[in-house]
Image (cartoon, rainbow, N blue to C red; front, side, top):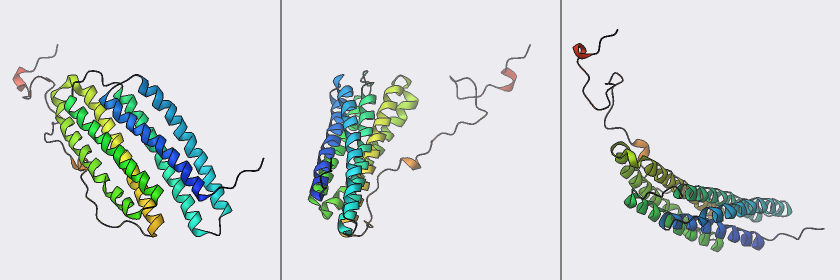
Length: 254
């Protein structure tokens, strides 16, 4: 059976459908942080399979379109851009599923303030994705530039969350598991922001034929964090004291 000819409009239709799936995944992830539900994990797992299949189908369709329009530079560039958007959307779906998996373990509510900040970060990521998808479908270079700058908001959220979590790891051992899950969720959201940023760069390059070279705000300073206290390698074995035992008080062998 002969395959139907592929048009640029049909590629954008498929991309819009896939974008809607990824957007729904991310919104479910945010909802799971705010209103935990056992049904979210099963639903997002099924949706993630749909996103994966959509990416595979769109990739194949983009390849066929590019082959049929090899003499049309604009068409080929469009096919490559759409294929790249689909790849980033697939990764966003994976991160959203992981967020739901970790959010399911947040049953003790030991850190409500930090969990609220993570939820607001998820809402910001979902809003940014919606604006970016609109920019893609409208082929709007200026909206792509704004979406590229919006990643700084997610970086700021991530840095704030890390700075809030670090003291807890040393001061509240009973909350370490919850803090770790929240840290990984925030990290996943920060990576989602990076994928959105890469999509915005690709969109801008496709529409304008040049890269975004302007300076962008950068708030993720977590890579420069250092421990304020260095524990010596010959420190005391007694975990209840910060003072080494005097030599003459050490227990004798035998």
